[in-house]
Length: 139
Image (cartoon, rainbow, N blue to C red; front, side, top):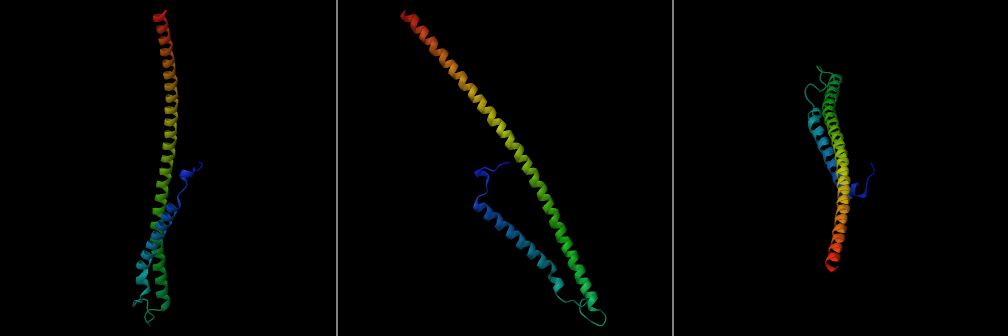
């Protein structure tokens, strides 16, 4: 489908879209920071004590971070896939509606041309009858 000048996004629309994307990204970053903030604070189980080696604490931290990333990424990917599916469905709907509107406009144009031809024929016939009637009255 070729884009006509009216279908090309305006600069302000692009700026609005970029601002919205930046806002969403900032929200995701804040969510992740807040969600993993507790991992940055040392807890008794993560401290290097005689009872708990530092390697075990590091493994626990890595495991917690991996779990968090999988949760956040999994939810985000699912949402993105749902949005893509919805957008594809909307694109198909808009394409089908565009074709329907084009067919309707074409039909109305043909109807308008037929009406103009009929009106012209009627006007010509009425003018001919009027001349004939005028000729009979004068003659």
